[in-house]
Amino acid sequence: MAHAPAAAVIGARYWTVPVARALVALVPAAVITFNADHSAEFGLLVFGAFALVSGLVTGVLSWRTVTDPRDRSLFTIQGVVGVIAGVLALALNAGGLGFFLYIVSVWAAVTGVLEVYAGIRVRGRGQVTRDWLVVGALTAVLALVFLLLPPHAVVAVGLLGAYLVIIGVYLVIAGVSLSSAHADAPRDLASSSTDSDTP
Image 1: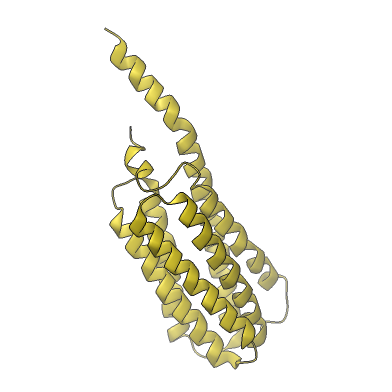
Image 2: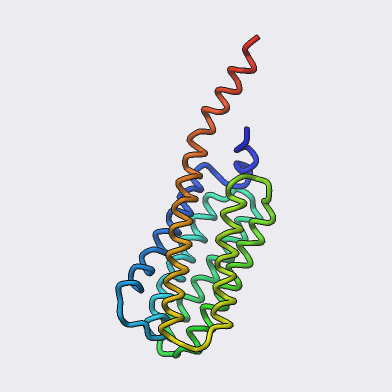
């Protein structure tokens, strides 16, 4: 019964969303880690590819698995913002360090706030509340860091890589946990039904 409130917000297949988002984050994280070029142009290319694919994955998969219409809309908007930011970063990859810091900051601020808001809306409805709040807060913090960061391409690209690693690992754990919770839910219901039938 503990999973019933969350079921009203997300479908049984929602666990695929954080897992897919994790994979999308971990690939560019590895590219940044194992590449010596940490220039602003490289950062824009990597961020652009990440934001574009992540936006598509978040928007499309959330639309199919988030059952609450308002939350579904929030993640769809988040996906659209990601696609727009990604396209701009890829198209203007020669924009320099200032543009790199600006585009990442705007993307992180908007998507982070949207995800935090989604988490606040569903507070008390299971693990998904914590997941949305944590990922949203980490993304919003990235925006603040990039806004306050002294202009330095190597540091900025490195911090982007660190952020991608952190949310990638967190989202993998979140997805696996949600998958296990949904797998256990039918057993919990069956057990509760059996107990209630016992005189």
